[in-house]
Each structure stands twice: as structure tokens, then as C-alpha cells.
Image (tube, rainbow, N blue to C red; front, side, top):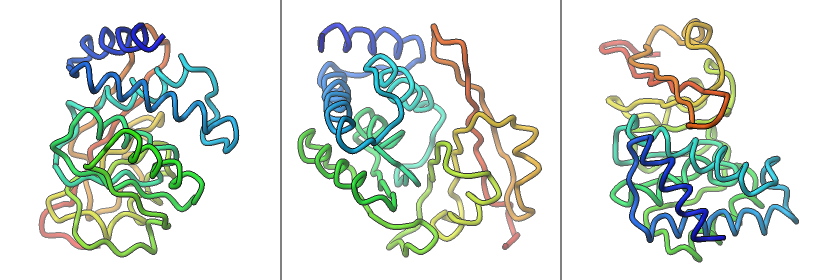
Length: 214
């Protein structure tokens, strides 16, 4: 099964202009193995079937890879490691902080880090609004975290002056744009759809407006 799943991931990712080595594909399948095993006891994600995990968690996370900039990245409200774990596997040159307030989820992430040998991730158990970073981030990633106004308020202190928030959401861009405060602006937005699926999602790149403060 592992070989066929790796081939499936490779085929779809290539159509999304994402090209991974066999070892990376193997780690993605290993991550799915761990998530499926832990999910039986700890209810880490509502998606239970393997194909659903491959599509909704792995492929949707990696579809955005060519769109994201920066090298010091933080996945806020990462949960079971989405999108941070797949992105960290795919892009070993970037550093990822995975933060979530749920201890059972961050314990799972620690086990993923250990078993898969992911040296480019750091795990924090905390609420983002009360967490004090030791450096600013040039990319903040969120996926179905909160409404955009709330998200921007909570992550403002971790976003570098030249950094960007990449918000993965099913909300319309026009609706979300009305929630962006004056010291921020929508720099770019893109709709993503995994081939073979009948739904899509948006990623909004939001940056600080030059010369303006909250």
C-alpha cells in the first residue's frame, strides 16, 4: 500500500508543480501511518479514512507550497500538523514552528518529529496570542484557524515587518478582505483545487502596509 500511496501522491503533486524525492514521499506516507494510528485513540482529526487524509491533509497542504515565501515559518493552530508537517517534509531548507494549545496534539507532533527525523521543525504548546517568540517570522500559516480579523489580531506580534500571513480558508476573498485592518493589506490571493476533487479553497497573502502601525 505504501508504494501505491507514494505513487498517487507523486502523480497528483507533479500536476501541482510540486516535485518530491522518493524519500520525502515515503515520509509523507509514514506521517499518514502515524496520524491514522494515533487518531484511533486521541481524535486528532475528524477525517478517518486514509484516502481522505491523503487528499485533505497532505495534498491540500502541499498544493500551496509554490505560493508561500519566507524561510522562517510558523504554523498557527497546527492541530495534527496541518499544513506544517507536510510542508516541512517537502521543504527541508525552511524552518517551521508548529504551535497549538492542545497538549495531546503537540505530543503527537513530537512523536512525528522523532520517528520521521524532522530536524527543521520546532513544536510549541501554547496559545499564539500569549506566546512570546524569540524571533519574528517571515511567513505565518493558518488553516481554518479563526475568522480573518481575529487571526490577524492574534498573530500580529509574531509577524515580521516584511512578513506575510498566508491564510488558507474556504471564505470568499471579497468577504475576507472586508475584515483586514487598515495597517494590513491583501497583497495576493489564489484559489487552489486538488485535481480530481470537486471543492476548492483560497489562500490569501496579507502583508503589513508600509509606514502604518496598528
